[in-house]
Image 1: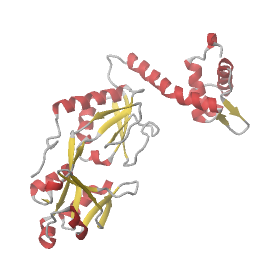
Image 2 (image 1 turned 180 degrees about the horizontal axis):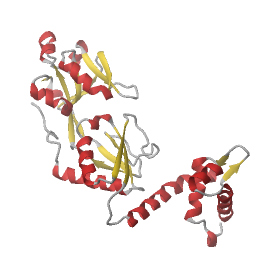
Image 3 (image 1 turned 30 degrees about the horizontal axis):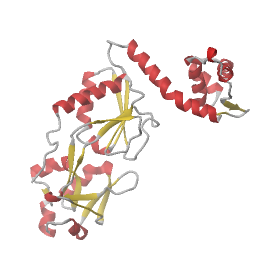
Image 4 (image 1 turned 90 degrees about the horizontal axis):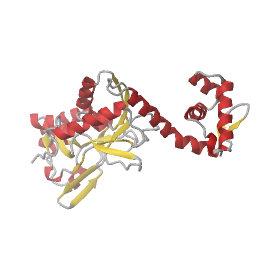
Length: 315
């Protein structure tokens, strides 16, 4: 490579656009340039680097191995550069743009909505899009700025920030009518002989029924007379209130009905406690809307506002 004539950031952006669009014409249309100008730019970059970056034929344009490696490495860097320039240009101005999140359905009941409400009030020029997905996905590849998950193993370049309560509990409950007719179990093993309302993730896996007492931990797989997808959790709880079986899920989801007496807590000495959800995002890219949201989350954790049940136990 001729170090005196390194490719400019503008030229590298054109090369990246060709890779993303899989063609010169599509890239040119996206960039507002002519196809010949885009082709000439890529040829110039190849000459400066001394290596072919694209394989061209009459039907398609594909990156070479060197081209794929270069595109993978410069894509986040160019995105971060654009975000940095945008932030500097907008310093002291209103936060604008799109905050797109990929989140587990569990946070959509009572953890994330009040945060989003306060975020929208504070930043009226920001738009928010929320993708609810219980699968383990690459949030960046899905076009999202950040994700919210429970206990997910993160890549090295990801930052994780606690969001919502520090700890949550799993809870087992049933309607008084069900317990009157079938009795109340006192050990997880007895659940195999009860009617249970199970929930299933979008991945196809059933949610685990895991219990803890002192140093003992047990996972049971009771037969589900009724199985409902996790995005229908509200319906599952309603059916438990109607006496159709035992339900095991997040305690904070059940608390209103435990307090009203519509549901009765069962085996509270076996209820497990686990870490709350985390907001995670790439350390390489933090656009202004995401930075503003992280600031809000940090403030909320400092005040514990909105999560009065965090860390509480029912006995």
